[in-house]
Image 1 (tube, rainbow, N blue to C red):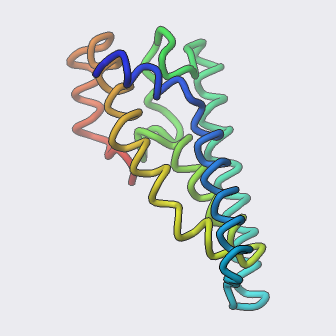
Image 2 (cartoon, helix red, strand yellow):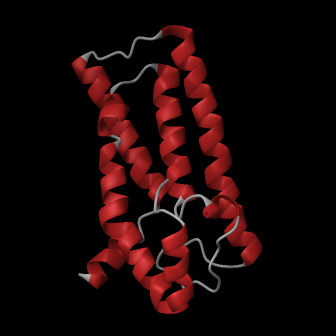
Length: 154
C-alpha cells in the first residue's frame, strides 16, 4: 500500500483539483445546471479566489524560504510550522480548495461545487496520510507535537 500511496501522492494536487473542476464544468454543461445568486455570489467568488491564491502560493513560498521540498514524495529537510502552517497543517491544499470554490462561484458553476468532495477525500484519505507518515519518520516527536497543536485542515 505504501508504494501505491507514493505513486498517488506524486500526482500534483493542483492537477487533481483542475481535473475535478473540469469534469464539474462538463457536468454543468451536460445537465444544464446554473448556480443563481447574482453579483453578490460573484463578488464572494472573487474574494475566495484571492484568499486561496494568497494562502496556497504563500505557503509554498515558505517551503522555498526554508529550502525544503514541495514534492510530497521528495525528501523533507525541514518541518515548516510558521505562517499559515500555524493554523492548518495543509494550507496549500486548503488554498486550492478555497480558490476552487471561488472560481466556481464567480462563473456560477454548480458542477465543480458538487464534485469538490472528491479531491478533498483523495487528499485526506491517501496523500496527506502518506505525507504525514514521511514527516513523522523524519521529524518524530517534533512532528507529533506539531500535529497535537495544529489541525489537519482548520
